[in-house]
Length: 262
Ligand code: GLP
Image (cartoon, rainbow, N blue to C red; front, side, top):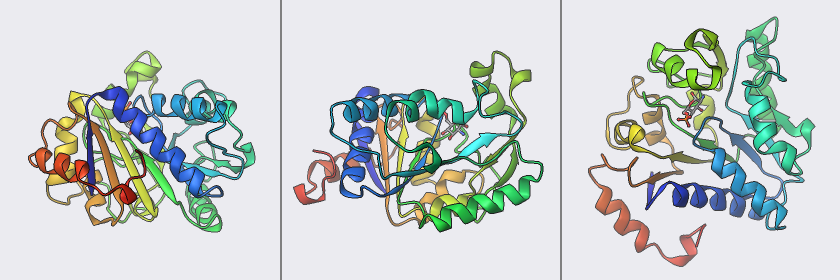
């Protein structure tokens, strides 16, 4: 894993957005895996800004989102399709028919999950996956205990995640208990992964993911098995990393040709 420690939240968000924009510029027909949550909101805002300035073109891009709530129709304000439309899709030129979400409203969810995996395969696999991380170390909605080989499927949210996401729904009772999420096995098949984590409340999860043992109890720790992961944190989210000084040194001394963002 490459750990990039930026001074503050804005800088970490900007770094992530510019990394993604550079990737799209060098791979115009790429398949992006996208994430939701509070963390990537500013990343999408920066991508929209770059698009408006003519610095990135999404015309040939395909997207697959990580997860979706079960039972929320796409037009529901808290559905992840709605989130993505409001923050990115409506503002850039990604053709709508090339944006994909797991179907949380399907009659046969298991069949819809298989179809989602098939659609990712048909598109040639995910080239760059953006990830956030839950305070308990979850990625997508793969809660602690998820199989590290899991594929897209229905999951039940933990009480902790329901509490964390209640801020968007007004109350814990309004948060759907079930979600459909790419599995950890699905996520780990992306060719490249960039994770963004900001704020002190992510410090524990980041340290466990980067420096702890690989365990289903910290689903993100599966990324240690992946050959091409960049973890972008601000000082706060990186504050519990034991090797923080080492990561800083490595980053500062990286040769220019290895830098995606300058
Ligand atoms: C949700 C999403 C995850 C996200 C996590 C953290 O559970 N399914 O993809 O990484 O929340 O969210 P936030 O960025 O709001 O802290």
